Image (cartoon, rainbow over all chains, first blue to last red; front, top):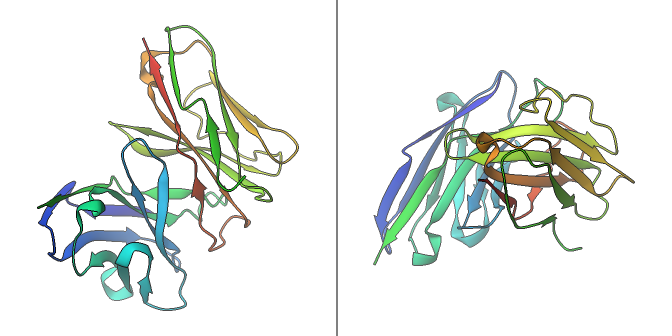
Length: 115
Length: 116
């Protein structure tokens, strides 16, 4: 069965600093991986997706993620944090086992950006 | 519409009452998903529809929960005899592709349900 682990429930960075949010996955088949962002009182917005076309994936708002099969990781990065990046971030993998295509989410990482 | 629409955005009700939550997916999306987001459990998958059919209802937390979808479009999640542990944000998502595909799910803003 697929699973996702996000290391760090809270991450705090200074404005302009590197953002690194960690995600490790478990999957017996090549996975489809996603990063979503959630702002307060809103739904989930897709940041980027990995679908095996390229290991380095660029998303919206300057975020990118690198798929590393050997490390079973899909960490999210942004070179320079903005105040507007403060939100909760979720890594997710498509569940193949149930054949319904639902997403399995990590527990989320709340990102704080200090001025 | 342009995105997934959910209503109501907030619902406060008394324990024991029934509630209906509505989801209007992106036009043309055949796949529809319901998730629940709560502090203790994170994001949990509840049920999936392909067209009007839900092949597996085992993700629903109890038999008080039911869902339907009509016309391959709008879906309703119904919770009967609500309990305090049902308090959560209920999120709906839709996708243009069959399960296992690489198309992402697009989420609505959710219904925040509070049981008094």
